Image (cartoon, rainbow, N blue to C red):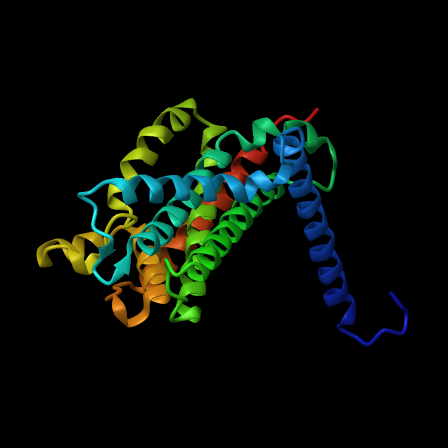
Length: 273
């Protein structure tokens, strides 16, 4: 930094450099995660995108051949219903599973002084989010081109829904991942929790489809809100989306604070030397 820099520039410049340096560390850890997880596979890092696409295509194919499944769900095509339901839920499950034992799996890199525990979590969360978003965008583009889906109607709401999905899932995954370093009970409870979350998450229904007396109870489930936003953004006026921005924001903030507190706590317990 120049000695004759204007007053007040030094602090901002140092903060900017610190943020950029940490961003480079997270990017390097993300590339390392890709290499460790996929480099020796047949198509390498393309599995990041290919895995969720294959899963969704499989579900669509199975449901298309079952005669008792309607080809349209309350104004949504079967393909659109599956894509806007399973993709966000895959994000939830994959982030949660990658959060478990994240520190234990990457313990050796903590010998580097600049790498922090939160960087390990962020690298995995970024990788899962990028893979799911690319898979969703690619799948929707393909199905739209073949006439099986309509183009999205409200991009702003769709982007907001995905942003809240990533925020909520990442914050919860980091909190659960940090807690798994404290107690093995967390790992044992994760699988039943993830399976039990599927029927209530909003992946298979919209709040407006439920009986009136159940709708307010459904809106207490945080996952429901970003599912509603994603479907409301994609299908527009064809569906009635019910969500509360204030509620999901408060939940995400609370989870973020809890996650950072747990990461700070385990940082004191992890022995690097």
